[in-house]
Length: 409
Image (cartoon, rainbow, N blue to C red; front, side, top):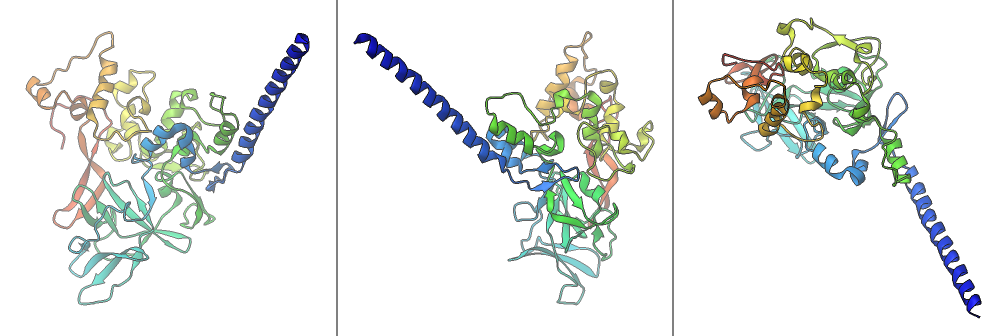
């Protein structure tokens, strides 16, 4: 009798285990079917699908939330009250272009508009809707308008240091037509935009096949397959179907940044957005200037060239952009963090660096390495027109790390 009871209990345990096993795997199977149908928001010309970066939140919540605050992510956004920095408040919503033309910035039920008004006329010369914001607002913003599938830059922009509307950089001080936006203009401000013009100098784009801002996929590649795989295999902790920076060479990591931060480039036969992280940049474009001439390396847009010319770079075999910059976080203005990164190298060297500057000045600057060795410099290429001051050069922090004995203007 006892043997039969033991036998029945044993069989029961086996059956219960089998049921639990199949129930668990059935649940996993159900999870698989749930994630196969991830809907892409855009498709690259190479056939790879982009998805919303919000899909990354489940596994990388803090990284995604931090990245959404960065200038990179906010460099190209749909126009809205939250994304446009300029004011539409009466008294603050005008730009006097010249004696005859004044721009007014108007908020309507249908959106936000730039309207130039000719002197002695009551009706605006035109009303142009601001559809897209270019620029996070760190230095300023410019605004783009859709006309069917054609994309144009509007004449008025916003300048953060003066908190005012200004004439767009490079625009004449007369009323001018909106400027066509080419694919090379978009390449450094957004993750992907499909040019449907038929040539690289056209300004027609697929309005839906567009990924706003510099998101995760600009550096890690389209992640649809990555998300699908790890939803189906939640216990596999080794990242699959994604570009990992740790697997890239130093030059590949530098090239990923140099695409947009190495000044004007002359493209080869490849089209914009062809270059992907991990590629060799010189196969896609090359500098449109003499790299050996520091005079030709402007602080605006050529951080890569200036860094390469610095001793910190030439004396290191590992230093790259991410040594100092965490691309996932908004670090602008956080001098303490950057100073610590300077000291993390210089305090561990065989012969540590001792600052030889004026001790009183060093104390005044709170031992700020960045302020002294990477000062703000006036850009030779980024200039704007301010009604009260005329043409003004924008101050940009140089990436030519060095010893500056005189005050840099």
